Length: 415
Image 1 (cartoon, one colour):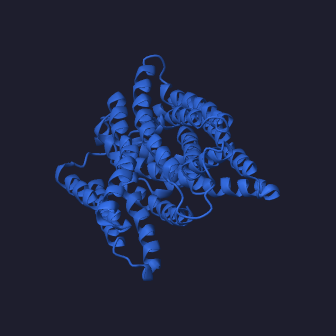
Image 2 (image 1 turned 90 degrees about the vertical axis):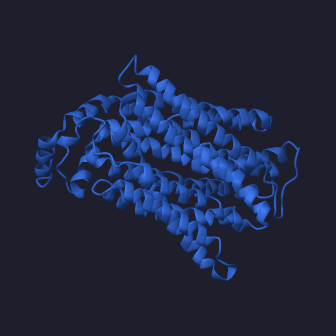
């Protein structure tokens, strides 16, 4: 746990620093080349880190930093390529397929990493499996992916020739209310998932100690059963959430043009209810807590692909990579970069008065985690705010042709 809490911010900080750079490059240069280079870089760094000995611990820390840089390249650029290949309902489905890779990859990481570790007899063998897959993926991108013209799926590729400055792009994004509110909502999701990934398994262990169905772990290594169960649930709910979100949005678009942000808002508010119930039932029933986690996470992950689709609707093609990058930057900065530490700090503060009480150790962590459903509700409100401006911002993006870009570019210098 302590090791993870050390490496995680190293990865996140490097990701946040690199994402805006790749966003800038992705809007101006060949995305296929940048994407494949990012995958190759990530693969080589991960593979080389498996050969670092304990005498060069600082190199392992540096490698985690470089991994964040590699990951920021393809996470910022990949959605924009999909956005230029498909539109409307087909784009929603293709983005869903793309975001299915998050829970699917996490699940395969658990499984293949464990198999490789057991087969090789050491943890570093787990770091030698995914780089091979990455090298294959990067090669396939170079060979089979065709760089689409920006705006080609929206039939405006010929009118999107004018390049605006980075400062102009940032001013436009800051004035795009749908983009700003959906980015803040995405940060709320990141806040909750980051805190849950670290603390929910520990919370469930403490619940079992209170129920006297397990003993408190006072020395390492401790049982990882609850972490594995929670990881499996997260993978399954991620898959379900993305699929249900795409299908639900497609159906709701037949009723209202604001379906995308409204589906996200309802799912967030519903998720908050079931996540609150976790802390009500955990003291009595671990199974009940897992059921609440399953439903709550499914609803929470429902908006992954939809949030990306909202961005594609309200941001013009020549600005999308920058928009995706800064949405990721905001999500990490306000979300999982700090939420695990904040929850731990609150729990420790509440626990000070009764440090030796097993019951209070359980309750204090539960009270701290109760911050998450409130943040999720706030995220739901941000999606409702997005719904208010969604149609207006979408129409602005659709109507902005090359002459509009030049006019906007000129106005940027007057701001």
